[in-house]
Length: 275
Length: 80
Image 1 (tube, rainbow over the protein chains, first blue to last red):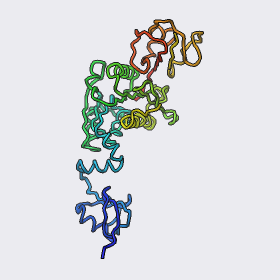
Image 2: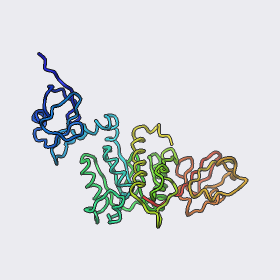
Image 3: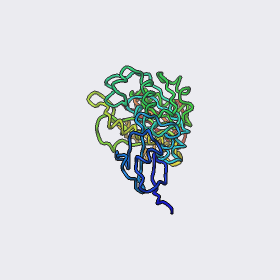
């Protein structure tokens, strides 16, 4: 007589298992060293009986998933098509401050295959109001700290970090292999120099700048506009950082994630970017 | 000849009332005018008109405009 079987997900893999099986029994078969058991997003005990459609996650605390497992988990979240495109892509990020640190982390979580980072700066206490660093990073180069952070998020992406002051003489060398370049500088003069230089030296490369993101104003005034076929700007376009109107984490984060989302959109379907 | 402009944010305040301005953002400019000459005609100060593109591509200030060109001028704001 056939045993009644149920279909469940174990660490995102489909499995057909015997009805009545407990979480502890399945752990013994699949991952005996797992010490955290999660069913349908809730922590659970080994005695819990599994039901049709359950999503079980077996975790060993502190274990680094191997490359294949992490790849599978990313595919499950992003779909295989998106995952494959992200993995073969190269994105450059100029500046690792409020915008750049958020853009970089968002793109690392998307599984971009190679990130090219450039920044000359060290982390100061005042950066922590909006930049994705921690107390332990104060005094470190932003490039070094970001490499450390990225390794703790996804150790299988390639990170090329340039601790350098970007200017018209080195932009081509640093970013020429990038599919998309994201401008994340703070000073207006640096933004202008960089955007003009990318437009001049790398005219076939997509470029996403940002302008107007200070303060805590209207979230919906942050927008994405096209300056050219391959040049985009994000921000409210008018609100500069100045004394009395500082750069604040939420609004800088909104702009940064506009930029990161546009990177993904360009990589997936560049013919259908409509702004 | 006639060109089109896309002038952004704070720079728009400088645009002159002029009979050279046609409907919308179309302007009548001298045949063979350079970007620098058009920026001057539009009252756009050099220190603020920092990002300049023609038809979405890089353009130096010496570049000569052609009929139907679209001139983008963008002033980036501090903050990042």
